[in-house]
Image (cartoon, rainbow, N blue to C red; front, top):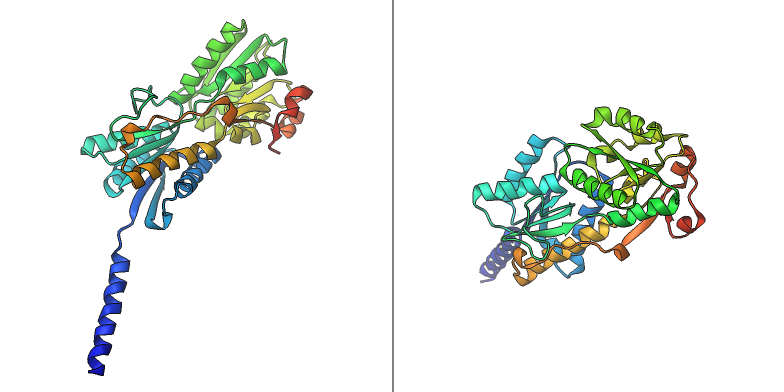
Length: 326
């Protein structure tokens, strides 16, 4: 009898162990195009946001893939993630579009979230910011461009000519460049646009723009290629007394002087909150509006070191409201 009891107890323990090991975890696939500080903190913010809303992340298996800037790899990872995972997150426009395309091609409608996408309507991820669409929703990192242009005028009241630098193949950068150019033109400021095609010509293009006759400042929108090559821009503007307003905070450490930037960790967090609602409450992604950040949710930041190397002096009233990234 005792032997039978021991055997039954052992069988019970084994069964419990098997049940525990077989407990299915929710798989969330995360696709990021490149290593980039802003995108990295958005990813971390997403994970934290999921937990903040009370979702037990011990029940989640995150499957992270990074395309390393290679479109073929991004496309391949997207196909794998939408097939294997219960939910997907695209960080940046290219990754998010690849995930949606892969899901659509396979006829899948598992929830797809995006973050750090500048213009999700133009990217055809959703048709309106007022709602998600079908199985897709997320958050936009459209910067407060009009306020960034006002910041240029605040730093240089007599500003007459501003250069705009971005990568021609990045649609999100081009969209921001058009908004910036319209805002500058409306203020009566002359604009000069110069575009890079990739890493190899960031140096020559930024140098050409910094050397443009009469240039007072350079505006750089959020741009993955330039963000990965900020040293080239910093070298190009060294000692030229040309103000550089970068599109977002992480670029400030490389080449920017001052900006008003979206907080990418906060952006990731609100996307995590959306994921928690979908997973915990069964809400459909398409029922959640796209989240955008207000000016009040953005941060004024500056780099005293970059200002010094470029010969730029910011007004005291601008310095007073900035956090120094150095």
